[in-house]
Length: 267
Image 1 (spheres, rainbow, N blue to C red):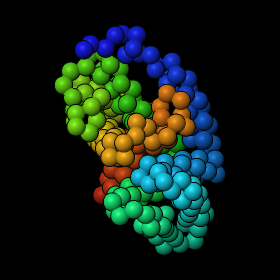
Image 2: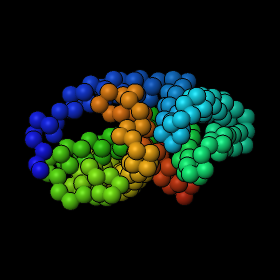
Image 3: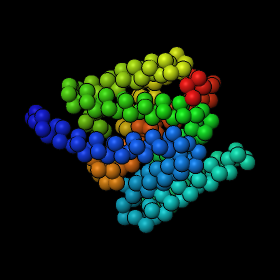
Image 4: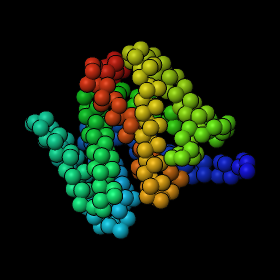
């Protein structure tokens, strides 16, 4: 049955209003950097751990809240102590390990996904501090442009599903549109002083972000929930909004191990 145009776009206004608020908060934090951005990274990380715990063990709401607070506090401690010793990075494993005391069915997945979330929060804060505003602007822009291009292309053109068993709304048209949008963005960043490698790195990060979105979709289907929470009107939860960023940041951290990122000129 074909979706009526009005129904197809009925959530756009609410999504746009929430997006404007998130963009404003993100813009101020990214531009300010330092404590402001680190604090936002800690808060978002804590909220994602809380949502993850609440989804995988909904009967343990108090424990989910405590795990979220633990994650935010642990990341803050690591960022404060990092200048004194890189060994403090090992503390990032504490929230995932704390989640081992949960139902056996979700124990392993929670630990792996929580570790990915902690590394994402840490990676964002460190990238902003060491690579400057250009790096954070680029990676967030890649994820946002890929998501927006995919959203409108998928809604407009539809077509075959990318992975219908796990993410029934994601189409090949939206997926490819996300890659194209990322290539264009990477090309634009070369004119801002970034290296030409951004042209091929951007679609790679976009694809990693799409995989991050698919992993979270699988988690929601496994947990029998529509959204990770209802914190963000029109978007669901924090994890729903930042799942793609997890995949993109993890890939960027991996690429950074093989050489300097081509961003220094764009800082």
